[in-house]
Image (cartoon, rainbow, N blue to C red; front, side, top):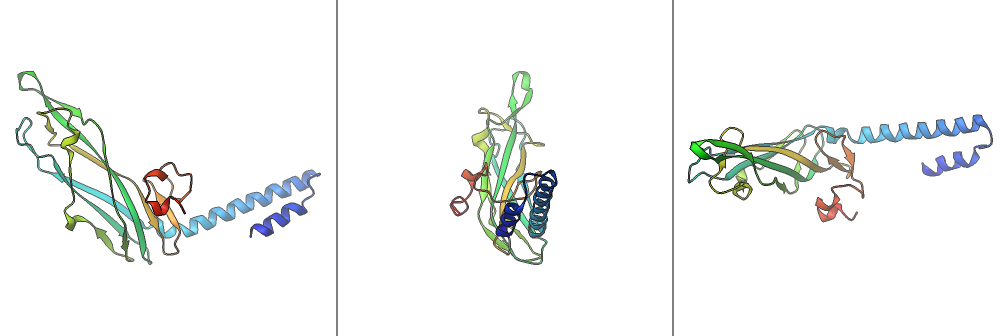
Length: 203
């Protein structure tokens, strides 16, 4: 394919305006072709969905034995007709705490930082949903508390989101999915490359 494009370029008469327009048309057609091919190969990944759920034991603000363990689960739905390999799912937790003040008044404050974690690879058969809920995964967010004596806000104590996930489709093409952004093939200069598994960094 590339040899054919190069042959067309070499044969162009770059000294005339019509030739310049001909070259421009060739490149535009080539870009459209690449875009259509990427869209077609992305169709399987478009049908893969990943979501997260969290829960925790609520406590009255100021309770001396307030729990800080967060239970969470990540689910992966493969809506395509072919199996997919989800190589890694990265997630983020942020917290809100009730800080005790004077006169028994509690003030909501953000946690000291956000917790970032990930789960490893799994293969999801066509039309099925995988979940790690049976593994009962937990995260202790006590390390995010702004100070001693603060308890998780019983209503909005934990916010969460899927940051990104890596998918290898049935053809072996590698994709990066970041919610809210277009799905893209893996690129060696990806801004998140440092966080990817080694097998995705050096290929």
